[in-house]
Image (cartoon, rainbow, N blue to C red):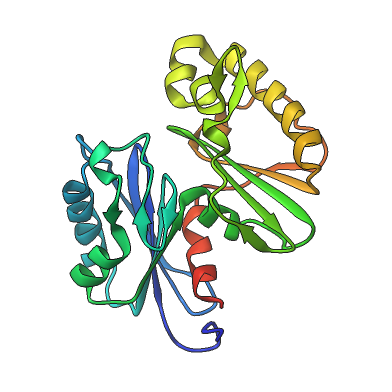
Length: 235
């Protein structure tokens, strides 16, 4: 059942390696008020991040349901990987825990998938890449999510993964010029692999892109990672 014609409001939560963000959405997926953010606690344990979410949620007013983007694989509400957070996230019941703490229905998904839901056109093959603390990915076919794609941990070059070569730690070591050359190579590699109709690039490091993007490639704003929260409730 599609809920967007109702009056339900959705609290969208984006858990990231550097920041935890929330935004209240109306039934049509439009923002109500301003996005709020807290730096990701260190160590980034479930307890610490739950506390950050509760603090942010308290400042957003009333809401009816919650959508969460998490930086790792999420299956049936349980976090299976968490490379850029504390290892104690592995096997954590994120959906049930937040449902209990907030007293609202909760749905969870990978953060790149949620950003994709807020960015895609819903036509053909669409690939979403997020360039932030890590390297996230989401794949969509005619608007439907292909679940659990973890492209960031797939081998890319010189025995390292996409995340090891293009994550924030790599950028800090190699600098902007080399990072851009690697990103160009990654895009050239992904194009014939997925034969996508559109590639969307999101995440904080997109502002560091210093080359002309090829056709069928576009940068999407970070807020897409929150705006996609409404789509989790469109069954």
